[in-house]
Image 1 (cartoon, helix red, strand yellow):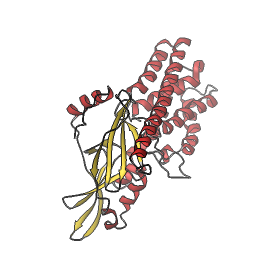
Image 2 (cartoon, helix red, strand yellow):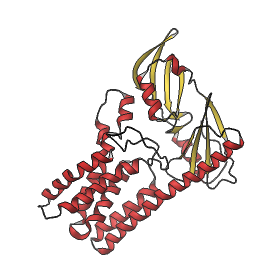
Image 3 (cartoon, one colour):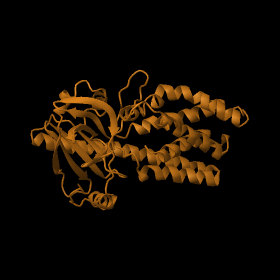
Length: 335
């Protein structure tokens, strides 16, 4: 998730473990540092845009590696603050701050390689959007009160913030499962029970959800809100040129993106270039991760260094539509 959420979660976990054994600000500071450390892999250049995307949330987010890092960071914190005999407590606090970071990331649709170095599988539950104020605000409020009061009452507020935010995560998983049941029932009625699909929340909430269903000739996109009048989901169909894939040959970026997206991608030819879009992040017609992978040369395709294709959405249209859709209004998405 976003850096602010990870910082707040790490700080709140550290404060909860350290309690009154050290100053709240010290626990919050080191917990915040631990909570943001795994995302420093975003500063590493892995050679090209696709590699940078698919190696983010890899080794630095492996539960094995963050467990190894916890004692080292705890030793530094303990030394900075005078070696006050709290090394073991710092170990637990900072391990929890580090450990919860990849677990929280795994609830988004991006893909987090939790089992590095034993497996590269990108876990992506997809029940949380990358930024969700209803998750982050309880953490910030509880942590803020703990820092302001510095007494038992403040620590209780921090614990309540952690509890509320954790309950919200639980709600997101249950809400996603409910929408998935609705989608499965509708697809079964339409004779498409074997179709691959995913369900993920629209930005900043867990009330309105986006559904993408893969088809032989492309994909379909629909939206569902818990405030909708009925459970029927209207889908818009979009064509894809997935038949281009065999023509691109042994394109390493295509193979890696097909693996990383779990097959939820589209291909199209635009001005003689093969463009791949990750269907999981964004919505038609704009996606966060789009890459040019090959250049046409007559009947052949030449592999090129993956080039990111930028897209700037129309926020002035998107936000009013999102708010209306959350409230259950049957309004078409901006295209």
